[in-house]
Image 1 (spheres, rainbow, N blue to C red):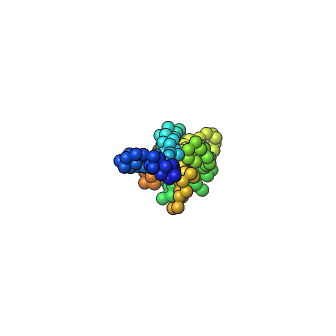
Image 2 (image 1 turned 90 degrees about the vertical axis):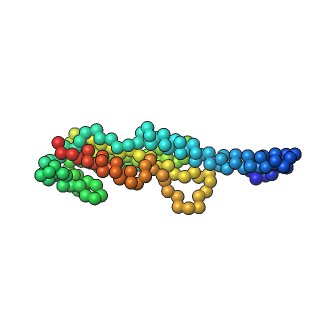
Image 3 (image 1 turned 60 degrees about the vertical axis):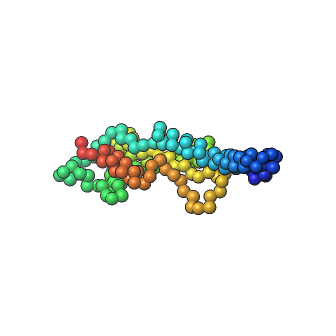
Length: 169
């Protein structure tokens, strides 16, 4: 890229044309180096918009003794539902599909699914996507995936999803 820019700038006849060619070609090569990040980011946002989210298909039918007198679940902790308490009634399953899409960036799909054990039907699921940085341009910092929403919004959505899923019927 630098050689092409230098050769093109030498062939220009006026100093202003040399500047325009140099700046233009350098900008083109910088943008070209990040094209997979740009297009991959668009693909990631599209997947997050179209397929990701928190879905409640049915509220969990749980025994009345798992709720207090006000109808609040006794099995809820700060980390979410106590899986040991709910194990006889519900199945908690987590599935990660690595390289779900790999057109421009490596995108993983994560599904967290809750299934009613008696009816063997999915009552709720959370779907999200994680996009990993480009491998074309090496990164020198800590490499981590970016999700569909930031941590604060995700926690708020989780709490809303769990409240709807485990409301007393």
